[in-house]
Amino acid sequence: MLNPSQTREWNAAEYHRISGPQVSWGERVLARVHLRGDEMLMDAGCGTGRLTAQLLQSLPRGRVVGVDLSQNMLNGARDYLSPDYDGKFLLVAADLQALPFERVFDGVFSTAAFHWVLDHDRLFRSLFRALRPGGWLQAQCGGGPNLARLRRRIGELAATAKYERYFRGFHEPWTFNDAKAAAAMMRSAGFIEVDTSLESALTTLEGSLQYSDFLRTAILRQHLRRILDDESRTAFVAALTGQAATDEPPFSLDYWRLNLSAKIPS
Image 1: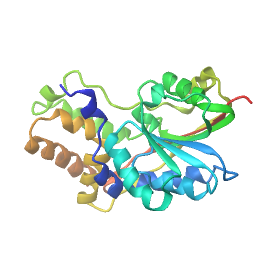
Image 2 (image 1 turned 90 degrees about the vertical axis):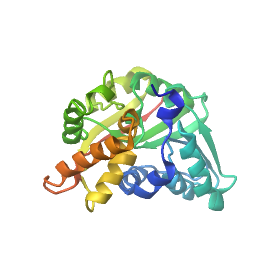
Image 3 (image 1 turned 90 degrees about the horizontal axis):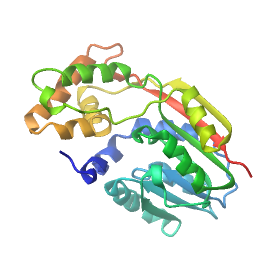
Image 4 (image 1 turned 180 degrees about the vertical axis):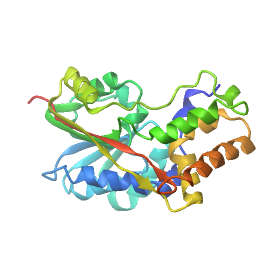
C-alpha cells in the first residue's frame, strides 16, 4: 500500500515538459482576470509555476503565494520563478481542502488542479476562508464527462486478469463535477455571483510517444504506482496508447473543462 507522501508526489520535471495543454487552458482563464497590479493572490495548485510567472508579470506591486501538495512541484516552481521573481512569491505545501490561511488573499486563481481534490465541499469552504471580503475566485478544472473514453478504457484494462489484482479497492483519483453541482457547492460555502460552465477541450497529441508520455505523467500517475513491476506498467500504457491510435483524430484526449467564477461578500 502506498503512503500519503507517495501519492501526492509528481515527476515535476516531466510535468513541466509536457504540460502545454494545461498551460494553454490556464492562459485563457488568466485572460478573465483583471488586476490593479498590487493584489495578494493565491495560485491554488501552482505546479511548476509556469502560470504563476504569468500572474507575477501582471503584479508589479503585488505578490503571489503558490500552493501545491507536491513538494517536487514546489521545488520545480522555485527553480523556475526565482531568476525573474525572487522576493515576489512564496511557495507553500498545503492541502487545498485545509488551507492554512484566513482572510489573506484578494483573489484565488487555479487551473487543472481542483479535480485532483476529492471533497469539493471542503475545498470551496477552505478557499472561502482564505479570501478577504470582496475577494474573487477564477478557476478551471476537469468536469462533467472529462476523459470519459479514456477512463472507460482504463477501467476495462484494469479489470483484466493481468491487472485485476493491482486494482482491487482502487477508486479514481479525480472528482469531475458538472456545472450545476459545482455552483451549488460554491454557494453553500458562501460564494456569491457564482458562474459555472462546461466546455469541450479535445486535445490531440503528436503521436504515440507524446501520448504515452502524457498518459504516464499527467493522467495515470496514481494508477501506475499500484502496478508493481516496470514491464507491466509499460504494457498498461502501451495498451491504452494502441487503442488511442484508432481514434478520430488519433491520439486525442476527450477533455472537458469546468469554468468557475465567484466572489465573496464585501
